[in-house]
Image (cartoon, rainbow over all chains, first blue to last red; front, side, top):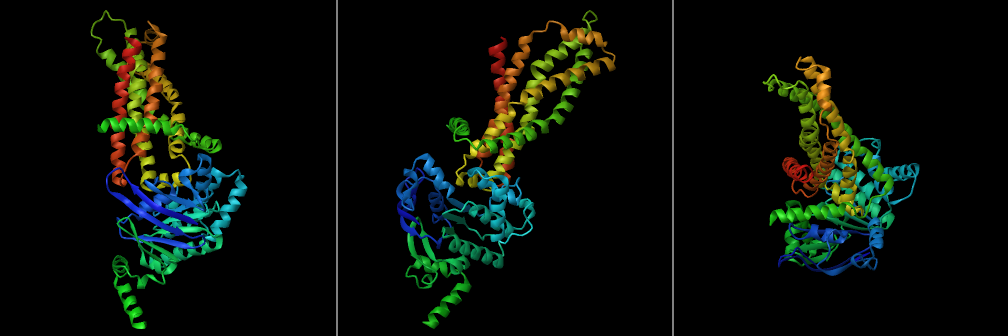
Length: 255
Length: 245
């Protein structure tokens, strides 16, 4: 579980990017951070990842504040984090298998055979077949995302962060990737936080949704309650596409 | 103020390179890969340029010796002095700023653009140590490249002088041995060592701190070449002033 308490983040100027966010991301759930471009989603995610130090406030990872830990414990906490980047961020010079084995090589004393065995377990889990020896440039965008997910979970992380995990993918592959992340979250009891502005993802896997607006937490709820959100910013965001306008009409008609 | 900030950031980067080291077994492989990319991969072009420029230096010297009183051994002497003192360490380093420097900037810059550096940081890896330290260690082998450049430059000069009929082999070798000051070789390798550090770190700085996309990677490579060359030339002047004057 990750608890965020009165988180503020600025970059030296008068204006704060995050203006006091408090929320909780629960274990074993897919937690989504949504909001328009410029709402502070990426800065929030980078604070959660420990890449940005909060200006004020605390982030507690199962009760431990990253900034208050010793360097050794910070390192241990980092090893418990997995990250899926928007562009996958796979290492170009390494094969698929080497990319997945990389965290094991860096942080464990496992021998190569053991690392390979673990890598193949997660490769199987993310349904990535016959790609072990290929370079990232030789596989499709969807497969690259699977490799990124496999690399993120190979170390059995307690926290999984995903930045726009299905951007640039066709709708079917995007749904498969969303579902894969949700399955993994439930299966391994991970605290998963996904940064997205894709309403399909919200409706597919949004067990908890945090809506950011101009650095504030404007609304939080789940995919079941978002259509009835009593907040104009959320309503404008959710019903910005014709498809969801029609969904809304259907919801109103039903009720 | 902008330049001061950049210099400060460069110094901070150097500090960052030496803290929180990467696992030794991983680092060893990275160093070997960098030696292959930066040193072994540059040998071909260095050998080619050194041999032919050495030849040109000998021919130019011979053609400009109008006075018949001047001994033919001067061709060997002049070739040796220009190759050991300036051509091999400085001229080759400028070429390496283009070849190795651009490679370093573009490879690190591409990693920055494609979030691979962020991926390393998220995993708790000191990306500066992981990316830059192996390059610095690999470039410690750079003096060997320059030694080869010196040898081939002189060999090129000898070949051109003898085959072109400008001097006999004995005359050229006699020139090579005349008034030889061993400290000049020490001076050449001291500056080669400094250039090696500049060649590894300045392009790394431009790649690591670049912002933007693919177009900016290209721009960063060009900027890196310009600044690496500027610092090589400036440090060459300073070292020469300090050690030889």
